[in-house]
Length: 223
Length: 80
Image (tube, rainbow over all chains, first blue to last red; front, side):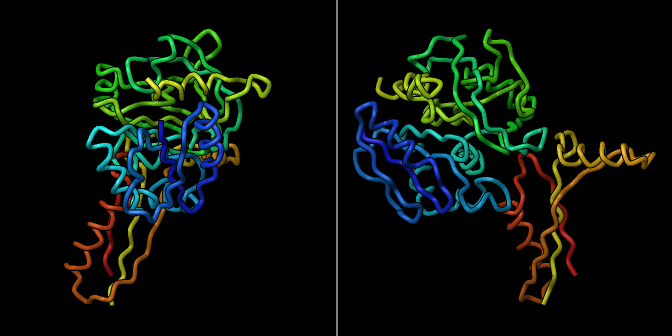
């Protein structure tokens, strides 16, 4: 598998993301935001975490207008798979490639810790290696992770199986972490080829460092 | 030259965590009778045009495209 990892001014998770996919035996290529084309023969585009453009105005609001994002949008419209992690999730919502928006955490704090998550849906190209209802342990690190969508939008997400992950306790019961609507931590688009989540699977690769659940998540793209 | 003042606020019904925190602080400082606090941002633009109608139309487009996220935010435009 060949993975394109985007890089904007202020991105800081691009090397961790490369490391994760390379650990799984894949090749990766960094793509600078000014590129107008994506590399040929890629199987996945990852929009990694960080603080693109210093989170100015709103997180992700300026990065979405980078030249490379036009190519990413076209790639996704052709059915290509795109994964946005943390700031990448924010960029994809700002670009309207995913529904809803990410607001400031309800306690106004930057939250950085390991967090348990419940897998809500696995019939997609991302979480197919995980069981529905399984609880994963993945780090979160964000200030703007408070997912908002209106009632009508939420109903659509539920009905179409677009909710990927929810913040939960170890038993899988929903917990309030940042104020997200129904504790949502990750979603996908209607056609299930664009994925976004606030937690960082690329930071959960070794059990000695707390968890290797991220490997199982990222492996899903191999299928 | 035309000045445009854009105010951006979270929509009614979208919880404003910063407003809520400021509200709590005002309560604990003893300021009674505060019913609600909403915190937004103000963006002031200086435009070259003297045509106010044109300026307003342009700023509206700027708001829809970049300055506000209309999924969660409302905006007002004041042209001077």
